[in-house]
Length: 305
Image (cartoon, rainbow, N blue to C red; front, side):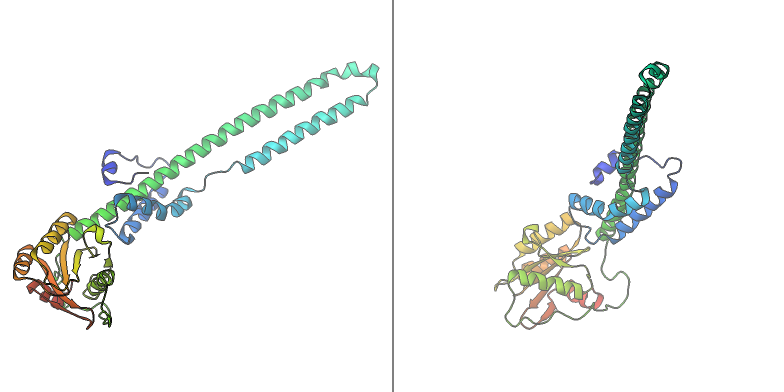
């Protein structure tokens, strides 16, 4: 199964053959729905490939039909074999009941077991060959349908990424409508991990409904479809160095940047953020407050994220 957009471009996919049109359309619809509903479009290519395949596989089996098993074939084969054995035993018992002087007249019947063995052998190998062929074709069809659905889903996810790259806050012109209650105060303050989750909560409140806290190893503390953010819980003003690093990470991610600081920002940091279109915020975990620290940060409270 293809799991990267580069492979999709290099490996052309065949179209539907006669009788496959309906299954092809269903696989396309499944892929489009999966692409629209995939929860986190910024997963790695490998994660997206594995998750999309896992999400589509059960439906693909329903669309293309299950792979035939050998159970029925084995039952028929053994039934025929037992019938063959019974025929040979019955013939032997019949011949053994004939007087010795009369047996030469029935010697032709001795060829019947041989004929039955030949017929059974031909039926067995022919049936097995037919079943193997059917199984191979069904597996190939299921793989093809899975590829159709997965590639279509990848295309939908890439379109959502492209939309996120071009996202501009407040484009709709509608007044900001908070998405649920603001984060509650943290009487005992917040650890670094707690501050990251708090930033994600503020992002969700401000309109980024899919915001989530992230492992700091990613270079950010919280992300959403359209934004990456960093949190500074230090007691000193946030220096321009941290804001520059966030700007670089946002440029690589092709998303807009937000910076949350517990102490505030130096003048140089604010000036750089204004030039780099980074919204700055000062948060107080204990009081449960958030304020804009530059023009873009203040504008978010009017337009939302």
